[in-house]
Image (cartoon, rainbow, N blue to C red; front, side, top):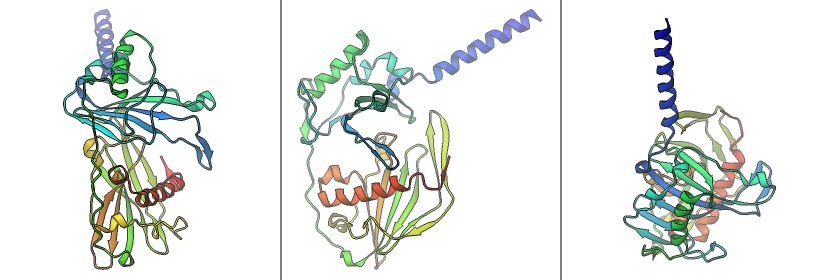
Amino acid sequence: MNIKYIFCFIFHLLLLSFMVKADVFNRQNISTITISDTPTNFHRGTSGYNFENTLIIKITADSIIIPHGFCNEKECSRDGLEIEYLGHHDIFKFVPEKYLIGSSYVNPITYDGYGSTKLEICITDGRCHSWNYKKVDDEMILFHDKLNEILSGKSKYQFHSKMIPPMPKVIFDKKNLTSINVYQLIAYPFDEVLLYTITADSITEYPFKKCYLNNGELQCEVKSERIQYQDKYNIFKAFPTLFLSGSNFVDLREYGGENKYLPLFKIKGCFNDGNCNIWDFDVVNRYHDNEAKEFLNKVKQLYYDTLQSNTKY
């Protein structure tokens, strides 16, 4: 009996050890490192606090992108020219072990109005660890110093301004637009869900089941009702001229997506001759088109206003 008890005890210890190590990330499996700033000027909206996160840097296995240019000693610009480095780098090997074993991110709301800088490390299966970006110990100081060299433009990597493609020629007539379909793209598992169809006089919300892989577990949101109402956001009228030029869709899920807490969308505009144009939200970063930006902001507003409506988890 004692031998059997000891055997079972050792077995459970090994099993527990395996379960603990299952959540430890391997540096070789890192897909993205992102640093984003949550400013102090967040405000309370009708559905809670609205945070306007600003992406400071995004690092993938073969690229480093700084959306607003290099930072100076005091701050990082929010309106500078986007720059990028494409090629091999060794940043992932400096990620502190502490960042690989779990998360320790404190939401800025805890500080009653003070913002914070968030560092997120994601691996290839979609799991991510989040931390407040600050120097804590020697291992972290080395990693942070490497990142600060990059952000300040003092690293060995040669950055170049991202090319803004010329505005394409318009080939469709806006008066022939019949519907705008909005899809949400789910990265893990790889899926897409039709959320809305917008016409000249109505918005239709569809029933859906959206599932996400969160820390290895599948979590789903379900909306059971189909609802139709007027387009109070004037989304249909705001359909941008850029989207009349054809399709230019980049599936961001192929590249790990953006911050996993931010939704990815696909916009499909269809015309009375049966043709449809497909675009993604990242078009704003590619073309810097104000008309398209305003249109997509209206779509985002619709999404966040209806996010909690008749949704069960």
